[in-house]
Length: 189
Image 1 (cartoon, helix red, strand yellow):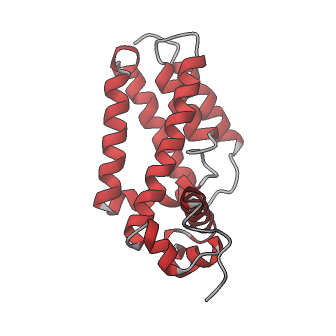
Image 2 (cartoon, rainbow, N blue to C red):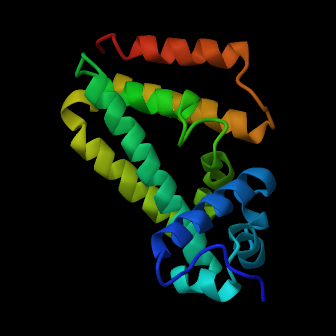
C-alpha cells in the first residue's frame, strides 16, 4: 500500500482538493475516460479507499469535479459582473469572457474535457441546467433580452467548435468572434 501524502484524519479538505485537482488534470490530459479511480488515487497519493471515503464512486468523483468547476466559474463570473460598470449585459459579457478566456471555463481548461459528457450524462446535465437556470433567473433584469441570449448561444457555439475540432489555442478568427460578441452586448435590441 502506498504511503499517503496526507493524514486523512487531520487534512480531509486537502485530500478532497487534491483528488479534484488531480482528476481535473487527468481529464485535461486524457479526457473523462482517463479519470479512473486508480489513476486519480495514485496521482493524489492516496489509496483507492481514501478516494472512496470522499467520493463513493467514480460517478460521484466526476460529479464532484463538475460541481467544483461550476463553483469556480461562478466565482469568476461574479467577480466580472461586480467589476462591470454597465449593468445591462454584464452577466453576458462575463459569460462570454469566461467561455473564451476564463481560467475556470475557458477553451484551455478542465471544463473542455468535461463539457462533452454533459450532453450524455443525465446527472451532469442536471447540474449544468440548474446552474444556468439559476444564473439566468438572477440576471433576468440585466441580461434577459433576446439579443443577449443570442450572444450567449453564439459563445456556446464557438466554444463547441473549439473543443470538437482539436484546436490547441485560440485562432485569430475566434479572437475576432470574441470581440464582436462583447461589442454586441453594448447594443440595445
